[in-house]
Length: 399
Image 1 (tube, rainbow, N blue to C red):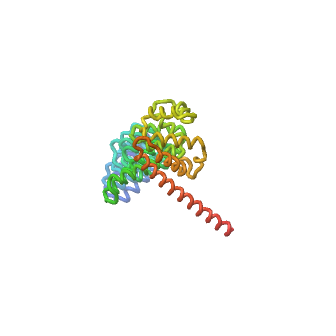
Image 2 (image 1 turned 60 degrees about the vertical axis):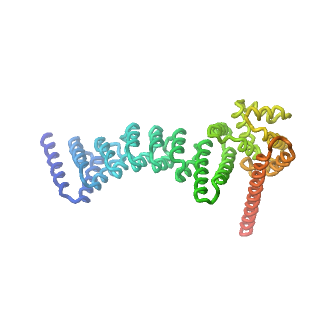
Image 3 (image 1 turned 90 degrees about the horizontal axis):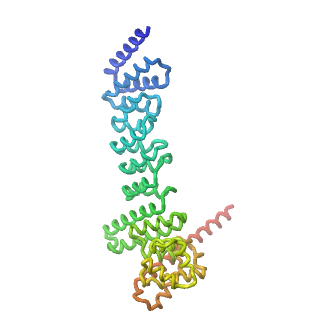
């Protein structure tokens, strides 16, 4: 009985294969789709399943991609799909492999990592879109994936992405706006990594402006540097205290932890970043640095500034700013710890202009730029408040 039944099934398969050789492509695709659904969802005997699998394996050689794509679409998400067919489809053309690699639960992590390494951008993007994408596969995409696949990975909220993979994406594709935007919006991206993105953007803009000859190269670089410093202070102000030291270490390693940036932090009222920066440069515990900064005398502060490698010409500015901080009343100025404090800078500037302490000209020039920036920011915040009050008044009148 079994032999007759098996022979009948073999005959049906032979007839099916003979038919598909001459049938139009759309009919072949419809037939293989029906056969695949029957394989997955009908209660077939073992012989029927074997015959259906054999037919699907044969049609993997069909010259029409529509037939193979139909097979991939039907089988892709099913755990009951025949593994041999799934693995063959995954090695097919990108448009056929993509749905299988994006959905099939039959692949282990090593399969996906290998597919990322060998695949084209479309294949990499399909893998990056997988639900619950494991960290090892995400790391492979970050390491060798195309910009498209890295963008899909960043937008996949189910993907487990390690911090080092985020950093690798920044290193490889951080110059692309499409990559920067989702990275800056992520809550799990460190302040140091966000700063790297901002630095890449500022360098790109400076090169663009200089290339168009809108500004001289040196001026474009200075403007870009100052903009980057402003964003750095904002990042520090908006980041948890635990992320400030890694940010400071990153700035030091990249050569951006300058006296000007540290003075900007202090004149913005960002005492946490100021103390962390001095602790990093002086190789001292931050608690010790805080004690010297908040102490009653200035001898210890001068020793701290010297050990941190601050230029001697900046000492008067640091001393006067810290004295202003001790007296209070400046930190409450508009903008919080993300913006320069105009009255504090004016006080420091007055002090430095009357000081006979080495060559203070570069410092005074810097302070003039700081006070101008603070005045403009203060005016902008004032106008924003007026506009908001006007809007509130209009809403009240309308109500």
